[in-house]
Length: 283
Image (cartoon, rainbow, N blue to C red; front, side):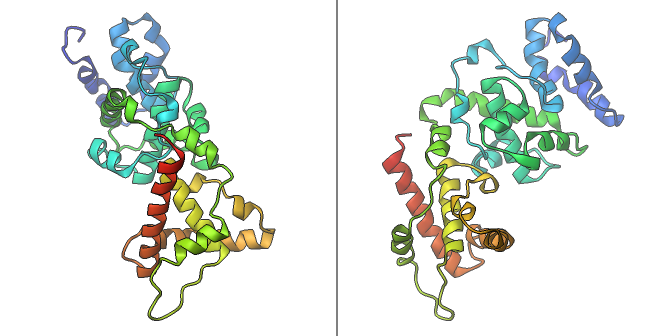
C-alpha cells in the first residue's frame, strides 16, 4: 500500500468493506486512535477521510498548504455553482446539508479544531449545526470518500486562487445589524413593475425578507442563519406571525418563475446586493 502512487485511493477498500458489511467506521476509528504511530504520508492520506466520518479535530492536509485560504474566506453556505461542479458525484444527502457541511469542513481544515468550532465561526447555530450534519454523513447511500475527494479538490483550487477570495467573515460582521431602511426600500420597490391584477404589498415583513435575501447574497450565507434585527424589534405576537410566513415568502423570492412579482423583486434585490458589495467591500 505504501508503494502506491495514489495512497488515498488505496484506502478505499478499507472503507468500502466496513460500509458493505454495515459496520460503523471501524477502520477510521482505529486510524484516529493510532495515527500518531503511522508515517506522515499515511497520516496525510487517511486523516481527511477519518475526519469526514468522525468529525474529529482537523488540521491542514499538507504543510505546503499552510499559506492557503483562511477561514474568513470560506462562504458559510457553499455556492450552488461550486456544489454542482465539485460534488456532482455525491448523493444520498440533501443539497442544503451538503453545501452547509462542505463549508464547515473547509473552515475546519483551514482553522483546525472541531466541526462544531468551525460551524460557530461561520455563524451556523442550533440543531442544524455541524453536529447534526455529522450524524447524517453515516447515511449508507453517501460515499464519504467521494465527498472527501471533492472537498480536497475544492480546497486545492481555493488555495490556488486565494487572492481572489472575499473576506466573508468581515461581511457578516459588517451586516450583523443591517437591514433595508424605509427610503431604500421605497426606492427599490418603485422599480418593480406593478401587477396587472392585484396591487403588490410592500409591508415590513416583505422588507425583512428582502433584507435577508440581500444579506445572503452579500455574505454567501444561508438564510436560516441570517440576523433578524427587524424581527427582533417586534412584539412576540408579530414575531410569531412573521415566523409562520417567512419560509413561504422566501420560497417565492428564491424560485424564479413561480411568481412574476417576486421574480422581478428578486432581480432588483440582487442588483442592490451587488452594488452594496462593490461600494462597501473591496473583495
